[in-house]
Length: 170
Image (cartoon, rainbow, N blue to C red; front, side, top):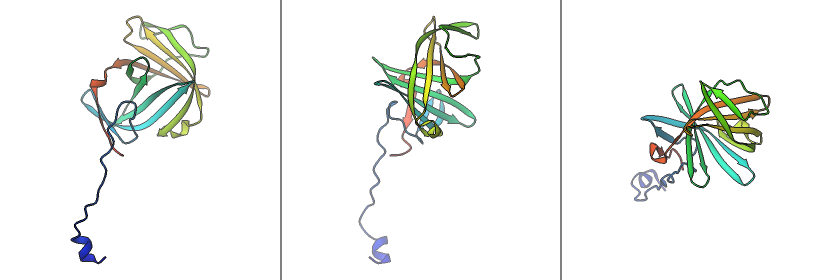
């Protein structure tokens, strides 16, 4: 095929549209709009504890990083989390006080992890996690142990309609 036939060819190149995303199928490179701010998905962690699976998405806007948690339990549960500093040790206590509020342990376990994007280095690791809720059931603390370090996050529930997902890839 000559140069002119390539330029004037009637063949159209077809690029399939990215698949529609849900909060359970977000991918690295997608854009998430939450609270009037656009965040890029730069990391994804898939947690598996027995037959149960949930996701943590690292969202970045400038220097601001938040985490979107998504899980399908009896119904879809979504949360926004930010890392915080909370002095804690294992074994995780039954209750903990943070910013003058008492949180009660709801769940604890060990999950196998698969990471993507900025979280790729976590693939194959296990984390001992603990989830806490305050008495209003509106504020949460989450802890994950990574070796000798324990990461703490503070969060709250959101509804699916509060976020918009723009697929950034196929």
